[in-house]
Length: 389
Image 1 (spheres, rainbow, N blue to C red):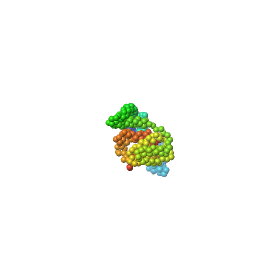
Image 2 (cartoon, one colour; image 1 turned 120 degrees about the vertical axis):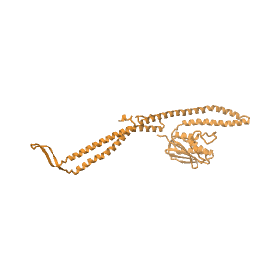
Image 3 (tube, rainbow, N blue to C red; image 1 turned 90 degrees about the vertical axis):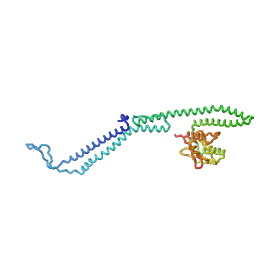
Image 4 (cartoon, one colour; image 1 turned 60 degrees about the vertical axis):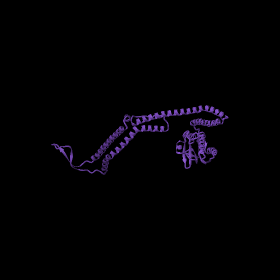
């Protein structure tokens, strides 16, 4: 039934299992009834009837046959035998629903084991691997029923996803290579333009010097953009180098650096440290760079105060930066961590890469970046977790 049943639909297969086990229940019920009835009759046969027995005779007066009782009187059974006969009469009545229930359960379990268990396990395993971005596998198809067809569809989807991911990965790598080549090729003409601009700024004509100064600002902006592209490429390729780091000394060092950044913009820094005297596997450079970017952003938009806090959360380091500025608008909450996104109109110094780089480094470090508005300002939290062993 198992092999041939693989080519039946699930509905027909289920009907076949139910009919087969229903027939089995009928057979078992009939056999039980026959056995119990036979046992009861054998008990009754042990009590011969009483009364006057008459025989047929021939002409010579000889008895023919075993004779027959006329006007028999019922013989009383013992209490034990009466109880046994009552039990034997009850058993077939109880056996019918019991056999029916057991056969239905057996049919369901056998149907699940033969028709559902293997394809469902394959689909569950495939779903888990796809959720983990693991497409290097194939979905096993064990039949041609509805679940077998679903497994085939899953395999088609997996193959399509794998192909799309490969194409997307190639496009991303091509984009990185193109951006790197673009940034590299721009350096030479920018160097030439800077040289000519310096010559023009040394001109005796005031209008020429003014024009050269304006050109110099745009050249500096182009240089900043080229540097940002190169920096972004390095960050996208960066991988953390985990080492055991003492948390409290690391927090103290980051707090000192953050204080200098805030003082440059005339803002007050408040440091809150709630760290145990412990060690964690971290990349100190990743943490330091994220902390510097977050504090710089907070100092840029804060009115007076920036707050930097450290704590341990779910076995990782949690770094939070709060400022008392206006906070993020609804659009910025969605796009603040996107590359080259900024609310500022002047991009000469700020290209909108700070939060994107922070997000990138946090994700590389098995953590995440959370951006939100606090009650009276903006709050950005960066989590750094050790690699799973």
